[in-house]
Image 1 (cartoon, protein in one colour):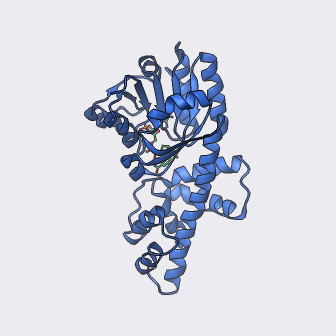
Image 2 (tube, protein in one colour; image 1 turned 135 degrees about the horizontal axis):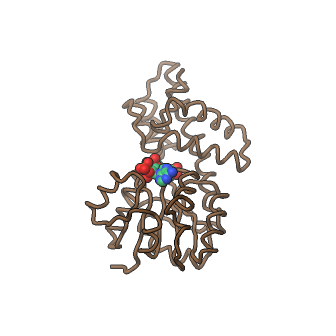
Image 3 (cartoon, protein in one colour; image 1 turned 180 degrees about the vertical axis):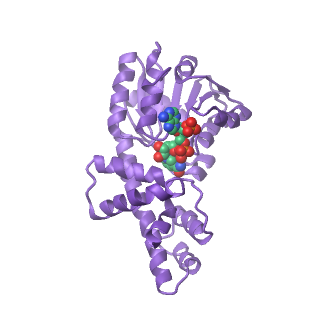
Length: 284
Ligand code: NAP
């Protein structure tokens, strides 16, 4: 059993299964979530809780954050009882949320001034991979700090890779999610094109799942289309946010632009449904 004490902030769809991997691996875990009701699952799994991010930071060696977006990160670091409002040194703060490289660079600088360390470590994969401990984790930050954090991250992911300095993990993640948005729109359009010509989703997906284009994404999202079941594993509002962040980084390719437009338009009506609910927007 490791003596490293872990703090976890953000118990959403991803945060709950990811933090549970660390409890399973024998780490002592203290959790914080803005909505207290979501902490119950972690308490049952053997964690303790802290009332605020500041109190959490005082109790642990490493803090891992998995929240929605840049605004949430601002609140957790700079908000009332936030991580930056407390005197601690030599803690490692790992931000696994999908956020902008700019906010990571800003928070890394503030953490360094405080005497702590910051890594950006977003993940590729969804709830299923979080439950299996098979996420792909891309890290930005100082090499020596990365090496210290790696054994912990390896309990959550099947691949943990440093891609560069602070913000590089976020940049890699936005590149991957741009492809994800394009891919989701492509799958939805293929199903609609097939249906327009008399081929239903099930036979089309059976063909695709047995061919060279087969992938875990195609299988899971194809099943969702066939079952007409769009409850969110990865909420459409998150890919709309990621494509906005990619635009801020200069995304201007034809397919990237198309995916950006499609998901921005779909978000008001379908934001809380799964990414593949984009098919409903395209059907109109
Ligand atoms: P989620 O289910 O929507 O959970 C969001 C979490 O962020 C909740 O714990 C929420 O707290 C917290 N939060 C939001 N705003 C906050 C604020 N202002 N202050 C404090 N906490 C705040 O999201 P998720 O699906 O777990 O995704 C989390 C991150 O991982 C996102 O950046 C997403 O893009 C990324 N991601 C998701 C997936 C996926 O498949 N779901 C895959 C890869 C990466 P409350 O409970 O209080 O609302």
